[in-house]
Image (tube, rainbow, N blue to C red):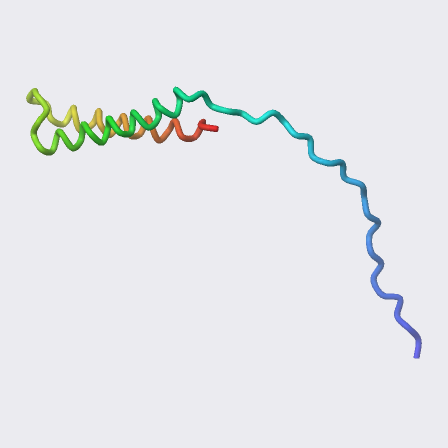
Length: 80
């Protein structure tokens, strides 16, 4: 009975090693500002709900707290 030739393997191609780029490092103040905004936002919302914020426009404090938290989370996308 004749032998089958089988499948031929493709020729291996040389791939150059990856080029290492300089690592990006964020400054320390960026991380402090990022977590500070999130913490201040949470603090504003908590103080709003236990009625410790002055003024009559309580929804303004709620939205500013949520905005500070959102801004802190958006800063996490650029943190290295």
